[in-house]
Image (cartoon, rainbow, N blue to C red; front, side):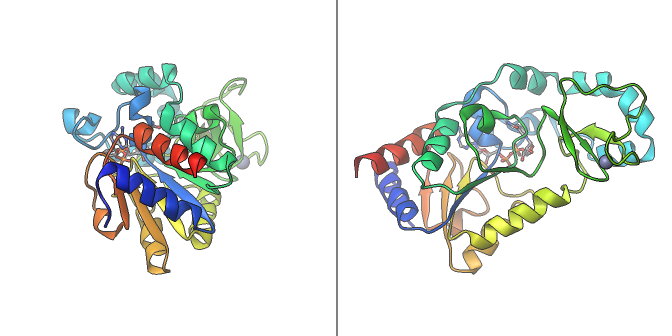
Length: 258
Ligand code: NAD
Ligand code: ZN
């Protein structure tokens, strides 16, 4: 395993350049430098305030009308996160991922983030495993619409396309299954991948944590970018123990200068 930041950046860049299909698996840590707090990790919201209600989706399924009516109250519980999300802009880490894609060195991003910052940075190939806060989704047919302009004239709102599903925010709630289309795309991407970057993810939330294990077991290379150790560290060929902005910018610079 290569550590020591300079050497690790060079090793990571070499591995990326010699791989056929590179996928980044991204977690909340990438957006930490945009001022969005993470849940886990030493500075995480759960570490500071305790774990939230994990029955969120169950409550939605039991009584979607009431769930919609209660949304103001829920929003206030997540006020710190909501405020940070509202004003967040992409940081050097997001921009570096966009650059890697433009350079042909990164084929896909699987992100657990809901913050829309990859799109704002200009990345194209993105699968959002936990949804996107700026979208709505039908729980039946998985069609999605921008939140802005989505007209709600009854509670709970019905899907304007399939007319039978209920519409909720696209963000995947605690206890909610990952939307099938996103999950299938992740599995597909992981199969093609021979080098996976694990960026700012504690890699304990399934199914996301499974993808790197699958890549590894089919002979692929894992590169971790995280200031802290994770349960997947020991599986990684290269570990960049630094904030994502610094580490990924270093990788892009190295690849540009070679
Ligand atoms: P997580 O499991 O991905 O953990 C955060 C990880 O980021 C930790 O391992 C921490 O060491 C690392 N980290 C902290 N600062 C970093 C930095 N500057 N650079 C690189 N890594 C850094 O994520 P979580 O916080 O446990 O959240 C779980 C889920 O909640 C996410 O997968 C997501 O769906 C949602 N969430 C999303 C956002 C967002 O959209 N920005 C924010 C919080 C939570
Ligand atoms: Zn529908």
